[in-house]
Length: 147
Image (tube, rainbow, N blue to C red):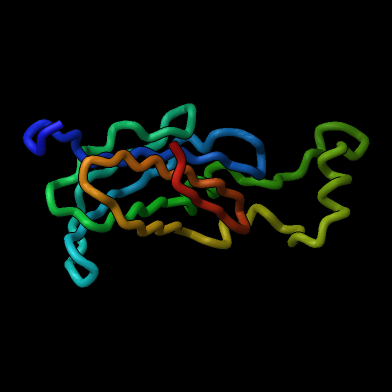
């Protein structure tokens, strides 16, 4: 493949909310790029995760991009989903409530996310595709390069 027909460098992402075992729908994110380790960040795209927690509509990266930053606005997501609300709809404790009581995790989960935003910065090479999954819960996150 010649350099004139090389595939563009691209980024996609998805978010799984591990506290509920479901995709995180409706998380706003922005994509920023820079050239060189000391280059200035430039906003390059924005999107929101779909019902499957995926964001597939980010624009191809400009030539010369060496670093990418994805900024996920997770505070708004957790505020709108109120994780850990009480399951008082029946007279007995659910298995979920019992499991919660056995953990050392904080008991008040509806106070928002411990991390109000997640910023992931990574290096890129021309012509590559980068899929960056985010595994998210109110008290932590993990990220990796997917396929």
